[in-house]
Length: 200
Image (tube, rainbow, N blue to C red; front, top):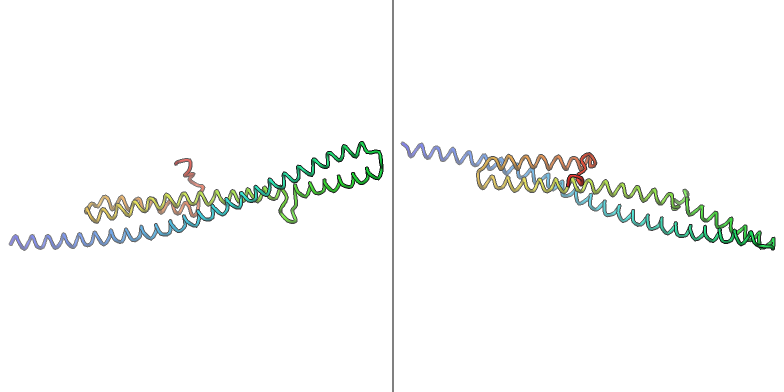
């Protein structure tokens, strides 16, 4: 009679273990799904940050080139203004004044050229916009990276729960999955809400 009770108990334990393992397998599958989303979003944000950084660097280099040209033209205009004041010949003085006006017009165009967006002011604004875009993408990327780490550890703990039968590991793995999902959602919708770089 006791052998029958033992067989029944073992059958119940087997059913319970099978039910437990199925639930853990489902948890692992859900964590892996969220991990794939987090990894994909992280790579996308990283690529966007790199592109915006290159764009910002290019725009600041263009800004510096315009600054150098403007300085050269301003210096030439100032030197010729001194020479024009000292010139005795009215025709030479008029020609110098004409060149000075041309250089000042060129210097003004180097400083601001709204029609092409390639004046110093416009280039500076565009470079700052690219920097803001880069910073936003980096903030998203850091959230996704931490989310991926939490989800990966959650998967490992859930897998360990299957092997050991310890329910606590599954609960802790699930909790890490929730943390990972929350970090991914923060990265997606509010990447500046929690400044992770200050925490890290």
